[in-house]
Length: 294
Ligand SMILES: [Fe+2]
Image (cartoon, rainbow, N blue to C red; front, top):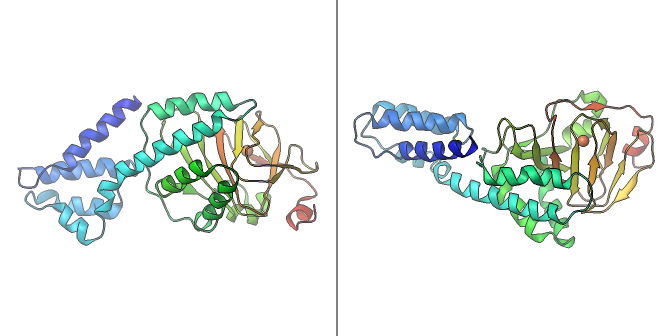
C-alpha cells in the first residue's frame, strides 16, 4: 500500500506538470495540486493559484507561483524526501550502535519505514525549534555524532514540529508545555499511515523538567545530548545519564526527565499504542527540581 502511494505521487506529479495549452489541462493541474495539498505537501496559497488557473488552459501557473515566491514548493518535494531518507539512515546507524531492550523493536519498523513511502510535510514555524535545535546540534558535534547532526539539520525544515498541547497545562507545568517540540519521522501522520508506531525527534529547552508521567506505549529514548537527569518513580532522586545512553520504558513505567545545561535532543521510538494519552503522576518535589535545588 505504501509503495502504491509513492507511485500515485509520481503520477500526480506528471499531471501537475501537464504543459499549458491542452484542453482541460488547467483542471488536470488543479486536481493534482489538490492531491498534494491534501497530503500536506503544497500550501493553500499555491493551491489557490492552481484553482484560479483551472479554467485557463493556456496559462502556466508557474508564472504566478514564481511571482508569489511559491515556485520552490514544487521542486522542494524531492529535496525533502531525500533529506528525510538520509535522516532515517543516519538515525538507524545511531540506533544500531545502542545496547539494551527495545532497540531492535524500534529498528524493525524503521526498516519498514525506510523501504516505504516518505512523506515530507510542510513545516510550520516553531519558536522552540529556532531557539534550541542549533545549540543541541552543536552539542552533538562534541559527542561524536556530527553526521547525524548534519542529517537532522538538513531534514528539520521538512518535518512538522509540534509543541504538544494535549496535557493539562497545570498538571504538566508551563515550562514544559512551552519548552518542547517534537517531530514524527515515521508514524501515522508521517511515513507509515495505518501503522501503530512512531519514531521521531524530541527537543526540550535547557533546565526544563518534564514531570513524572506514564503511558501505555512502550518507548525508547535515545538521547543525542546529555547529561540529563532521569527517574522512574515519582519522588526518586534523579539519575544523570550521558548522551547515547538509551532509556527503554515498558508500558506504564513512570518516567521524568530534568534537562541539563544543554538542550535535550533525542530519537524517540514508540512501538505500539501510540494514540493512548499519557498521564501525569503527581510528586511533591516538582517545585524544588524546577527551581534547580535538586
Ligand atoms: Fe514518555
